[in-house]
Length: 534
Image (cartoon, rainbow, N blue to C red; front, side, top):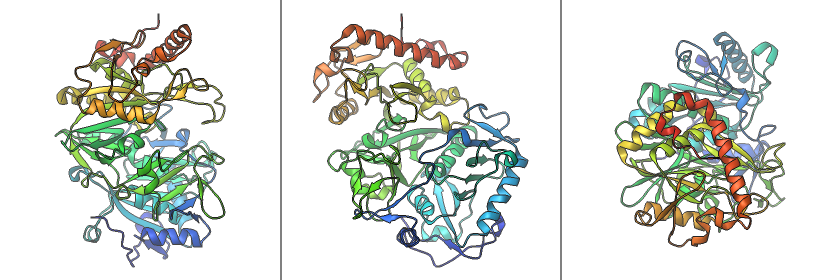
């Protein structure tokens, strides 16, 4: 049961060091939206959703994400450029500064919520935010307790979010003035100096990526998931921009969730969240009706361009190409009410290959599946990041390296074990370019991608002929219902076949170069899943 009712209560936050008598607790999304507009912190769009500008940061800042190195994490965390250690005493001092800052604000917003839809893994969370729209984001993205559940709510983790507080790197031990820090001993996610709301949800996701595999024998996954009428679950792994949210929103299947899930030891797949956080760049009602129609009152738009009447220019990337909307999952019509389903029968690895090399659909062997999971490949295209002028290969282990506290092979080993037990089919889906690289070829049609995924899930590819890709060795189906056969083998779509062969080998080299750091931990079966490049 969703609880959208505003409470009239306040709660004391002194136990967290926040001495502010004006604490607004569990405000309704309508009230938070109204406050945001009335205080000039956002504007109302013509679709009814509030639109805000997150300030300097319009995306996560991975180099400013830290984990406190303590007795819990010291020998478990995969320390390095992704998991940067932070001293406990530095955390304590910085935390005291942040709560002192919040104590000085006119109003502080508090909200109780849950993560993990499967009740045996559920985590109680209290979010304390400086801004009303940050609190609206929490309402949208986390699981919402009922009024009855709020009576005895006992938070296990606390999120402290203060975008207006800026650290002093020389004193506080941060890299620059913004930071997102996980403390597993104190069970705190501490965020400051950035208004980007994605840091809030990814802070908890990162915590679950440690807690679930280490203590609860559950695999955390950066993926979307849906379930068919027959009860068969499908999982979609992929980095930002590859189509996780879009492809999991299937009118013929119920959405479990669009971004973060767990796969339990007793074969359940469950959503971590209670909402969706979708990219809206180039969004159209015709192309992605589920997401478009979810943009309505109580949704929160970020960094979009609007005219004076509140009409949204979805094509505009003036502020950032990473324009976003968050909304409760109930804004989607066709959802799995419990956000829990059975083990998957099909797993899809989504990649937006800007080089136009990978097939639009191919079937992977278990070794190839592990290899591509650990690799986590997609490509950056010109304009999406400063300094990116040509397509660049991008690898993110397990399709979520920035959020993985443990070594990637630990997650890959868990996934391999579960795939073997469940007997799943694993497919590599290229939602990127065909007929040539970015700038020459064209983006694979969404209708074709949907048709390929539907055919795979319906078993229509079980008995068709396959051919192996000459470089990547993956099995390419020779026919797919409702898809022209000429697009299935990417080499056939290029006018210059020799240039295709050259680019395929060049991409294979980048795969092998990236995988060198994992070779020592990988089995021979996984190593055999690598592409050729000779």
